[in-house]
Image (cartoon, rainbow, N blue to C red):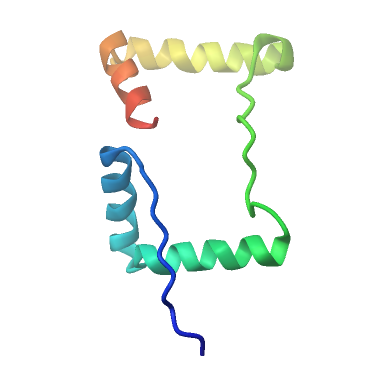
Length: 98
């Protein structure tokens, strides 16, 4: 087995690092093993082994009338039952995912 002696240095936002390492810790995967595995996948696939595209969010034009009405009814029912979020809460949740 080859000796591991090369270092990888990356600059990331501290909060992103903390969140990612917390997930890795929960599943018992050291960061170094994850990076080694990623590098091996890049070699085997000849590229990045996952999609780097921006997910397409549904737009009104891409929905059938039935899908649109079902989505609107769900939102309306959530708002009526108090399941909704304030704008500040919604934007805070969005920022958490960034």
